[in-house]
Image (cartoon, rainbow, N blue to C red; front, side, top):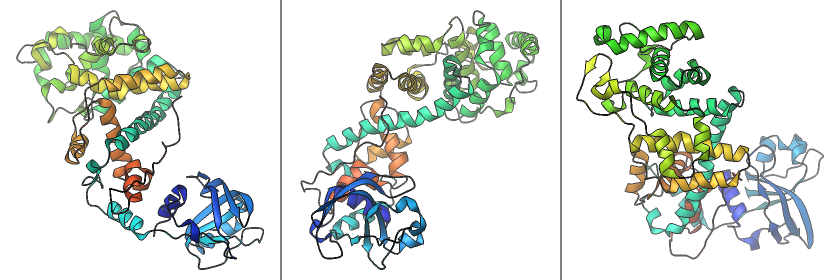
Length: 446
């Protein structure tokens, strides 16, 4: 028996209320189970109970065995002196708080089918434990849950953005540049791109934003891609040599220390996703514009927002994928799919974070609307949901499914999941009318 299962039963009243009794056999009526506490201290704060005709207000502690109150050291902890009820599966020992008062302890009684269903889910070999039955539920439950998961996911991403924001001295443009640059590398080259942004501050690039050649020289040079020996075919390449000349001057001026050029990965990447092209496209985004984040803030139309980030590599790259080696000629644009990935992972989270910091409700609502109008992502996680019979119609939905899979399914947090909660509350039947729903996790964007 897991303690978290007892928390679930208590929180949603999924026990036999007639058998919740005090020491004299009087029924304990739960007026309010209290606020679930995931941190240190009692499990539920500010509960309200009616015990033998007297209303009590205080905290509730839950254990599988009453003796665990002592095992966990709560009997010597004043934080537990306001516990008005000790709820257990087995009452095997009288327990006392730190001032010597005996705790009122009561055993829970519940339908065994609830625990059987819970065990079936957590022991399921699939990552998505309920994948064989989830499609039998009303889609309302999943859609409603996805809405809360999107907010949770954006709030989690805000923690990372806030760290960057603090490191940059609360500079929005520099924060956005670092975040944007990291996701220019997709998953494979995200780390070297992040290192590049740290090695080459935006304030340097902005001084040369009217000269694309110099912006590219700074980016390629700081990326270590102008190191001798990295591209042997580039020894006599005029463009490569010109970048080298520019970077030698600029690196001396700004004391730039390049990252190691061998960090960049090319293997098993489509040529269109080579970091050489992505760096040139990043240069195009940073050239001829001042205040990219400010422009994103002002853009309310998704198509116009895409235009800000769907840029081309410079002309040299029309017939190159790497320095010094010719290829079939065509314009190397970022493309709609790559642009949408950038919007989903960097632009929208940054705008959401801005909305939270400034308590701007319409900004938070705007980014959710953007997600609803971006095509669904295609990746291995979404493929798992398709196997379970769940089809996503937008990035709003795919982002919610990714959060659900990674933060709940993978960790077997079925009791914290609205779908898991629904399935468990139904026992072994999906036809009952019980409608237990978990509320969204704490933390509102507004």
